Length: 466
Image (cartoon, rainbow, N blue to C red; front, side, top):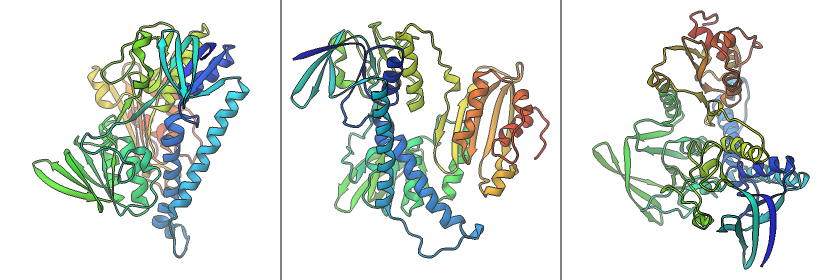
């Protein structure tokens, strides 16, 4: 068995791991990145964020032409969906981005190893691929092993009729009926994909609201919009059992006090994700994971072994690709002797439905729970000239500020291109801007971002355009 030595060994090449590896190499460290899968990029790039957004874009084109084409004077005959071509396009998008990471590794002289890594001591891991084994010793380790979908004990994934998000992104045909268990971000996004191209979709959610991490007003508005798009919901409902047959899947669902049977060609289980750390043999490194498989870290991302760091889905916090990337870069800089800082208030959360949802900072209920006196403003996209011209008027902007200081506390957007608009809020949080500054900053006209300015004016009691 051969040995190799490095300054930094990164385990996992997802959005937390590969950026950590690149940044550490840029800072002059000798870096190896170990990934068990052939493709770099992790869940986000290969079976998560990127393929889902590719399919959401394709199906949005189809849905918009079907629903709105005539209004814009666009006529056509025999508008059809070719799911296989959508899937091919998705794979092309993934391949291009994977090759980009490979090129970045070469450019920055990051050594890449494929194989499964497990600790054999606090300073060494054994990397296994097929029957080949290699020992990697390093001064520092970064755990960026990501997460995996959670299944139901009575309904395990077979990725054919009972699917995780991974299987849902590669279905061979459009299901006639689809049941989605879980109304979180993954559930509503994937439900949107298949509803747009003709599937009869029902979402079953144990809570009485969808996307529970969002502001209450945002959750209610998105629910109304998705219902109008034809997605059915059973909220406050629990799935008790499931039976797979040749025809598909039959679920027994307790909906309030009534027990019903729901059948579908495909059932997507989207009840959450768990940290993936089981293969690491952390105990050999002197680290004990939590019952949820998470790795406990301090404020500098150090585990109980100060030379072993963890980021992204491996640690507590929202499972967001861009959060993992921020943490990966921060750890690389910490190892190199720098003093980075992450402002978690400035990390946005986005749902890529149509319209999109983007949120930042505190929700109204969270801010009130802190005992703060608030300034709250709203602007409907019906009052926005650009949204009117586009024909995308569903949704609104909600802005939350602290009355005493005037500073921005939260920004919540339901509307077209919300994922891009939220960047203004990110900068405002980072720069500790006030609602007054946001309200008086010039915005190009007509633009969707004017709705942020108008929401700030609303909070200050001096709206102009509505």
